[in-house]
Length: 208
Image (cartoon, rainbow, N blue to C red; front, side):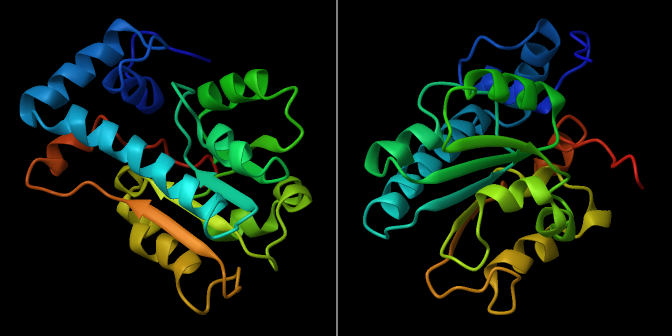
C-alpha cells in the first residue's frame, strides 16, 4: 500500500531527478538531503547518466545480451531497457526489486515488452536471486550477463553485508561465472552519508 505521508526511497529519487511520481513527503526528504549535502541532487543525476552510459557500452561494444538491474527506480526519462534494446532488440532486461510501488509501475509499463521483465525478489541476499524460478526463465546464469547495482548498496542495512552482496557477483567465485560477465555499481560516500541513511533505508525483510 502506498503511504503518501511517508517518504519512499523510489519516490525521493524520482523527486531528485525532477520526476512527477512523488508526494510532498518525498519532496521534503529531498530538500532535507539537499540541505545537508547540496551536491546530492547532482549525485543522483550522475548515477543515472552513468548507468545509461554503461548500459550503452555493454549492449553495444561488449555484446552483452542479458541485463539484470537490482533495485530499479521509478521510470523517468530514458530507461535501461530502452537504451539496451535500441542497440540489440533481442537483449533481455530484468529489473529485480523489492519496492511494491516500483514493481507495480514497471509491470504496467512493460506489459507489451516480451524482452523486459519486472521481478519481485529480495536481492539483498544473492541466494534469493539464484533460487528464483521466475528470474531463471529470463536469465541464463551460465551465459554472459551484466549486473547493475547503481546507487543501491547504500540503502542496505549492515546485517545484510552490502560489500559481500556485491562481491558475490563480481569475483571469480561468483555464482554466475562467465568470462564476459560484467558488474557495474556505484555507492555514495562522504561524511554526510550517516545522516542520509535513515531516509534511504530499505525495509527489513519479512523473513528476518
